Length: 61
Image 1 (cartoon, rainbow, N blue to C red):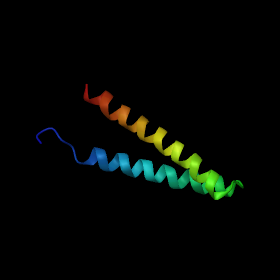
Image 2: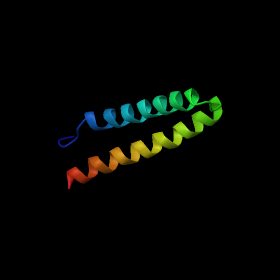
Image 3: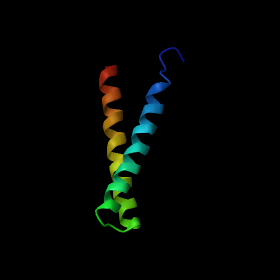
């Protein structure tokens, strides 16, 4: 556990959840149905999580 950083997974989860809630609210605000907005938000959440994960792993090398 020497090189493990506890903040990286917490930040990854926080960014993913905040992205999901923001995209859901924006999509509903622009008139999408809640089911469609939720689907778009999940895709945005996965993309945000992948981007954050790549940034974390690139700085480690």
